[in-house]
Length: 111
Image (tube, rainbow, N blue to C red):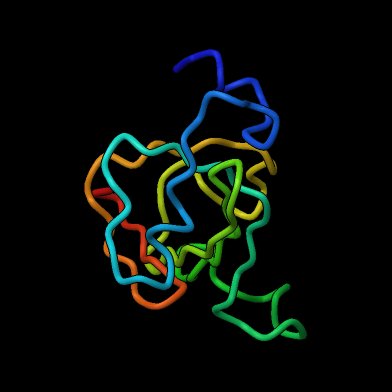
């Protein structure tokens, strides 16, 4: 498991894709799943207002991959260690089941 932390999930062959089976089908992302961040966007404020927004009150939209499929996660209350400065390629491990609504899933500090 630790070996994939330094690899691009797209290039790792022995990972079983799971995201496509969950997104759009109303299933849950299972605990223990690893997602790789591709992009982070603050969707709390319009583009023209971004220099003056409050960093503690934001909703982040993440584009993530399991190495095969792409999905979108919302983080409404912030998450320690995750910000607009988080580098693409950063991995996240899901610790609790995450319900999927349509093509989105909501991540919290608890999962």
